[in-house]
Length: 347
Ligand SMILES: Cc1ncc(COP(=O)(O)O)c(C=O)c1O
Image (cartoon, rainbow, N blue to C red; front, side, top):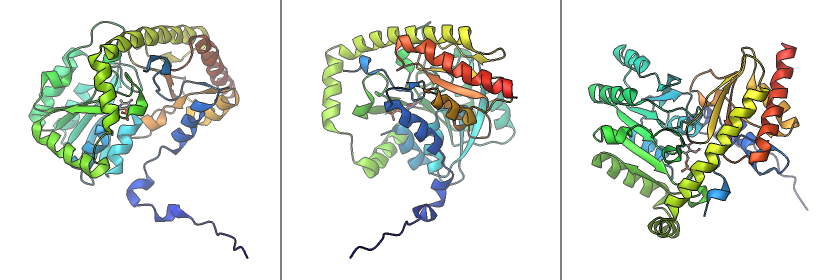
């Protein structure tokens, strides 16, 4: 005799803090990465041709109590918003422009009484805009951290992948007393190795070590040994040089395709490193709604909204050119442009 299993609704039992995390729509779009017939500008995946526990999460676990304010760039890396919200932080956005985070706006917010415990920033070739924080703003930012007593968490995931002028000094090099630098080998070695690093004030690092022990005990020794051998042999340095050339070429091809195909009134960033171009379509376009139409045309992008802690980004798109083959970039951008034009005509 077989009894039919009843469908149980597990979502009713979810902890309150996980209900507002979001990310489901992104998971669905990223799932297309494995599809062979879709040109996917969605995930920020390094190209496997360059190959041979997140510090973020540990920081949120160790340093944020429910309701603590964490300031981030708006837009910023979705994983950071989710990690901080996962520990019930109050995540606040600071706007960005072509020169990175608007440190002057942050200064006004602080003068008005905002008291973040942590400021999370990606100063080099940011995810999702591809833009970098200027040297002047870096100096102003560390000055604010010292004055108001917050910790800057500098995520340097893309710092080594510049293909333009030299990058300005890291925030950590400017102010090791108030900056925690977090890095990952996912973009320059390969993501499956799951290795990163952190450098910062000794007291904070020792807390992160304890948090890591409570999360996954320690990173796998095999991956660490592989990375060590690879680095000591000079291979990582050579891989980074090859990677820069590859991504420079793809960024240029993406820029050319955008100029050739995008409808009037669309703007985009021109990165000097990293994986991303950030596109702003004309007002009234809803890039979340259009992602289904894009999928029908066998192209994928990530819509802008999830990159903001608030409700902005409806007309924006993140394009990751990092893993789209050179000869597919123009066609992929053309398909996205067709979808945007159709939406424009329907307005
Ligand atoms: C800014 C930033 N930090 C961290 C990561 C994630 O790195 P990892 O693979 O080590 O979790 C990403 C991945 O997209 C990222 O864009």
